[in-house]
Amino acid sequence: MASHATTEHLAPGEIAKPNTGWIWRVFFILVGITAVEFVFVFLMHPSTLRNSIFIGLTILKAFFIVAEFMHLKHETKGLIWTILVPVTLLIWLLVALITEGSFMGEVLQNMFK
Amino acid sequence: MSQPTTLQPAAASATLDAPRTGNWDGGNEPFKASYGKLMMWFFLLSDAFTFAAFLTTYGMIRHKHEVFTGEAKDFVFNTRWWPIPDHVFNAFPGMGEANVPLGFVALMTMILILSSVTMVLAVEAGQRMDKADVQKWLLWTILFGTTFLASQAWEWTHFINGHAEPTIMADGTKFFGANLHMNQYGPVLFADLFFFITGFHGTHVFSGVCLLVWCFIATTNGTFEKRGHYEMIEKIGLYWHFVDLVWVFVFTFFYLV
Image 1: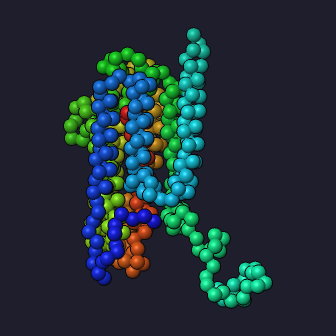
Image 2: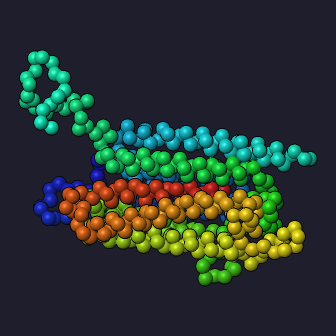
């Protein structure tokens, strides 16, 4: 598997220098996105647009965690698709059940009017 | 294996001159990842389905309830409306009844993101076979993990005991806090989902901390150094990042939306 550390050209017993710049870069990206989310919570009234912004930013954060911290971006294409394709089913589940919930709410709230 | 037993063309000699390396001759790793790591990925995929089922249930039940449409400052807890999160989660340890909307959960999110960073640093140290660094970063990760668990315990305690302002029930009695049957914040299912979803996530963090403690002991004993690689740290790391990932979604759907 791809590794960020270079272990070649080392004398026996010698330890390579840490290569941690990319880790802290991802960290600051994640903190920045979270900060933006907090700005939207307090400066914007709840609406479908605000919820879409939150979901978009969440997926962006998820991308950085999975791609960089979990290293999926640097794995083989086959492994990437093996993980991503089943996950798309979850998007369908979410859309289907939230629509269903809205419909149930509609029915329950208007039934006795 | 003493004798190769696969079928060979008649022309081929009975003994092999060179190892066979075709696609179907075994020993291949098409994904260039070890068995253990692949299985961890598949486990996490199945776990993602479990958490997605929980969060989708939350979304569905939330949409079933009425949304409060007035000004946020006029909002009062009522079983009619789904509660506004920053009215429920507005307490901070040591600050009494001060109104700090989402302040504590912001801190918890930071702690968990930091624990993810120290976890990657431990994995990176493991790839360099740097035992001292692995120990250092594992200890930081364990520290952040247990801090997160303690924060969650505080959050649960506050949620269960309730705010200073109680809900007045239909018969005039006051009700503070929450349990599985009733809560002062709104519909019964709101508290139930809070307990189940954050509880299930907290259980994952707890198992993660246990695994990290075991990893730390094994690192200190030199188990991984003798083995020649620190792949176990990478596998536990995958699990730990997944738990962080789940929190990112719980945070959005429970506290922000």
